[in-house]
Length: 338
Ligand code: KG4
Ligand code: ZN
Image (cartoon, rainbow, N blue to C red; front, side, top):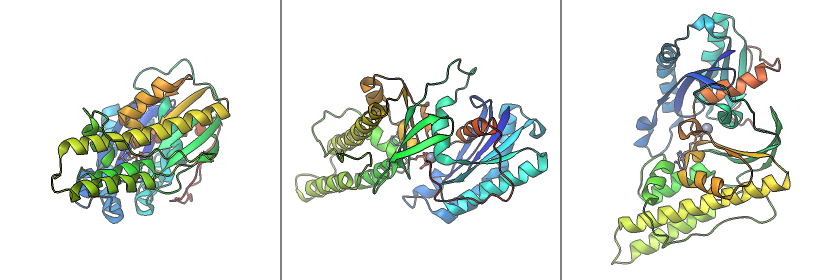
């Protein structure tokens, strides 16, 4: 089944065609990052207006790259939430009109479920084996750090979430403190390369809960930077930026890995899925692979950040069960999983 997936929850206008939940025929992401960089963060109104401009050209490019014509599309899926209301609105309306025009089923998908189903995607033939359930899923993105137990397709229990900053948000704020670019994650990763491990920052593990809290870590980083700046012998030393970027990334990655592995043991999981933009982080990926005794599925980095393929992929598993939505579906900026 060929599903067209549309993702406009934040600042990427992304459309893809995916066959049977795993084979990507085309996956086009029109990023708005350059538009928002000058503000140091995403400006919601700018984002939604840019989606309006980008949706039709992105659709055309997706169909062209996938060599798919609109009548060949068998279902239209779109991110229903969570996300920025104005941005979601553009995608949901566009998807409804498309579904009406081509008379194909319409379905709204939870963005976080999309990040989980990115683990099923690949650019080749479908895998012979699905990962065995139950799975422990860590979704670490700009707005979420969620630990979700997945007992089967579409069956979720939320076990833990962030009490303050999400992991991606923490990376973005830390990058600002260190004078690096936006979005912060890739800049911190790059800046941390070649560090010698001379600095360390607290590891907020929060005992007896599967919740996360990263705002204290961010404050600790800020204090360290302020202290160094007060010292007249210390300007913006690039080696210190490298060491602090490394220490920050290390604390975040270790907390996420330790908590996810602990949760997977508590629930006797057969595998782990890591998704969301932060799952693109090389150190986090390495730590998971080194430390886990059960299989860890982490999509390739370009499928960790927001894309339409993950929405089309997740939709397939719901459509297969006969699910679909009416065209009066509303968007839900605060939609939760589990
Ligand atoms: O999932 P995503 O693309 O959008 C949301 O749903 O929020 O995640 C974006 C977040 C940003 O905060 C960005 O800094 C972070 O993912 N990110 C990374 C990396 N690449 C993107 N964080 C750490 N390391 C990376 N390589
Ligand atoms: Zn996302």
